[in-house]
Amino acid sequence: MTDSKSTSPSDRQTVFVANRGEIALRIIRACRRLGLRVVCGFSEADRGAAYLACADDAICIGPAAAAKSYLNIPAVIRAAQLLEADLIHPGYGFLSENADFAEAVEKAGMTLVGPSAEIMRRMGDKVEAKAAMIAADVPCVPGPDSVLPNDPEAIAAIAEQIGYPVILKAAGGGGGRGMRIVREAAKLAEAFMLTRQEAQRFFGNPDIYMEKFLEKPRHVEIQILADAHGTALWLGDRDCSMQRRHQKLIEEAPAPGIDRGLIEEIGTRCARSCAEIGYVGAGTFEFLYEDGQFYFIEMNTRIQVEHPVTEMVTGLDIVALQIDVARGRPLPLSQEQVRTEGHAIECRINAEDPESFAPSPGRVSKMHAPGGPGVRVDTHIASGTEVSASYDSMIAKIIAFGVDRDEALSRARAALEEMQIEGVKTNIALHSQLLVDTGFAEGGVSIHHFEHWLEKREASNA
Image 1 (spheres, rainbow, N blue to C red):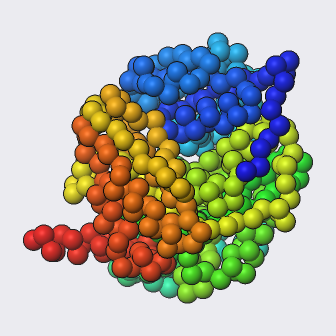
Image 2 (image 1 turned 45 degrees about the vertical axis):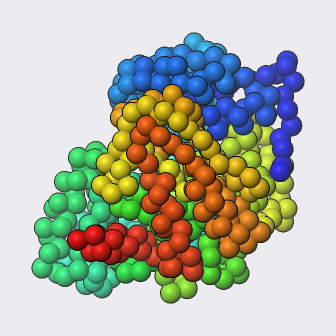
């Protein structure tokens, strides 16, 4: 594990955690290891949450509704000022990729643990991000690096040039919304209109772009970390293809069955592009991979939910390094010193009905986390914790590491067997079924694998 230097009491800085749950606890732990003072903002729904006791101080920022608390920029800024914060860590979700928030943090005289507002806007706009990646020689999905015009004939001509099927996407989109597949010319005009309306409704930006729709791609990511001194590193790859409606269920590192030389080539290009645009912080390049080719789709300018699998195979504390580069410190290692060994698998445990996927809020009456060699559990849940209906249903992550993929799988299966959560429904049993699925066990499933798996399950239950 690469550690950062601890801070002496005389220059001890304060980090404000602008998030909740397991990622808030993860940030608190990193700050503790760095010797930093750490404080939290919490909503009324999270008042009394056990993880808050791990911080040096905490303050209520508003009611349960995220729009009035965790997404309330003035409230978050004011709370951070009251607790005398030097830095604000947004975690993932909520305000983590909000350029207006990044600007507000800077204007308030504090430092965001993340890239600048300018970079955030540039990479958050998928059309502009694609143009930047093309300029950096990063391969992209076939399609123009510009938004679609309003002329129906021009749109039809672009689709014909790309070749059906195509996919329409919101330029400011994310989370699986603002996307529509079109397989024939007769349905293009209606699909464009509907996607544009959805883009305006969800993201406040009606701009749409078009790409070739890949039929059986995998979702592969490259983790990067860059400092303010011109060093940008890539920390390996992840496969996140097991997903439902573009929401990830299982992630692993490294991506199985892909040529390591090709991964290195793509990783090097990603790191180089970050250095060229002046990116500072942790980030993730997301690709579709099909038939031996990588195609860039977007960049996430924050820490990812699935960062633990990369930490397990590299031995690096990505969150601590992310905080240190925000403090202006240079990265303590070179690309040659980044080593990946073994294999790691992460299962996202959600408080939801495993059949209908409906959220299952309530009080956790019993919680037992698994352990043993190579097993890590990231969670803020304990016996007695109230799972709120106001937020995302993910309550824990089980991460299993092994010397190879087979050992990681066996440890993940055993950990799922040991995990006990009572009082709310969870998807633990679903994960146990997926880890023995023949296709997943072999490695290299496409992003559509889980949907097909569900169809087979429904057919067998009919």
